[in-house]
Image 1: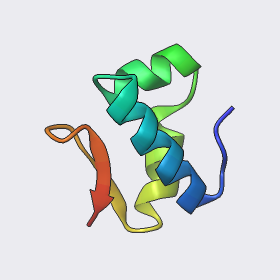
Image 2: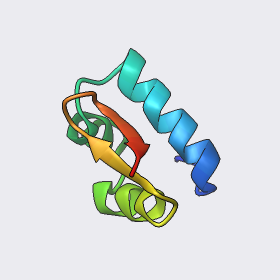
Image 3: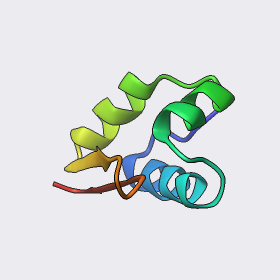
Image 4: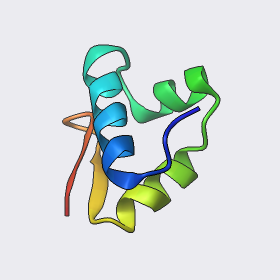
Length: 59
């Protein structure tokens, strides 16, 4: 289960994307997490997923 606090979630997700997963879809599938929920939380806090960098970045 991933943290719901946006700053901690951002850190955890970006670390996992950098070290373990080639895409957000791979991460979500492996961890059985909702991509929409992750993106909604982070989007509401000014971040969006950048697939070419495979990380969430500030809008």
